[in-house]
Image (cartoon, rainbow, N blue to C red; front, side, top):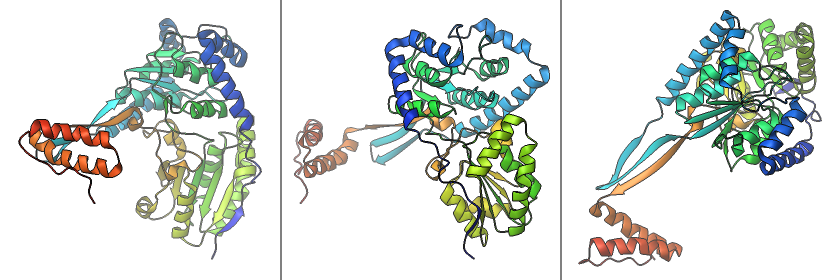
Length: 435
């Protein structure tokens, strides 16, 4: 049996990014040239915010008193899980040393970046979880200064729940800035803050484009597009759970694809029947997003067996991959291309999005084929070093001189020559290029 698309995405649904690119480049240039004043002007224009750019310590402290205890307990619960998972990740990153030749030592060392800029979305939804994911992980990595920013609401500022979370997770400074102006303020070190070495966190297409343009001048977590999710289900799966898992991720936005891959036609048809009614149960804005995402970008792919299903998974490289099928250990061992993997119906992508522990800032648009998501590793640099005794340097210097001359790099060769002459003045070496 060949792969059959029972539902296929509309290839014309993708939006043109050229206007976004031009607009973002213009804004970044204006803010870099105009500094604090230009960034504040953008905050007023795009977010209706005329208050201070920097959130005061008093405002951060007051946020805790505006939240119910149960919500604060839930945020602390999620923070604890994410912190402990990040600490476990960091424990796997080790310094090392090797004596590559007698008397010649080389090694690697882990150094966290000095400053991180964490973007926390705040448009349609207030992304408490994004604050936890980005700031907590930077803190565990040992980043020296963490700036966080989020879009302020007119006359209110950043919602108290986000402020409480930012403080809990360890932000050193918080900016009432969203969009391009937030990214620019952190990258350019505006409002008296240090320039960010790395920019992280999800955002809309303008935020993603600003990070893409700035990449190179600063590090970024990844090039991010709209979130995407794939559910893999066999005949043992519950079609009601599968349909809700697809709808739950489709509510992210009209441009967020969701895909079902199955080897059971009955399950596929059941899910397609259920989807419209399930989407209709969502609140109006959420339902509108999910309806458009499912209509234009949703796919249902029927395969002949689990190996064919796994091949589809690897070719798509989904951000989220949820397996609702028998023999979970087989899937765990077989799959090669995903941002985060969810095994069994007992978990769901929303758990990972909010509170389970692994990070929810993940590669999109197929990038999972070559990279993973945000982790302590992204905030750390693996650097190398070497040292040697004079005897240990001898064979390395000889090889370096000859290889350099073969390559035509005489200056390189002579830095080796002069060491051999200094360290072993009574000896003669053949340092001509190899034939």
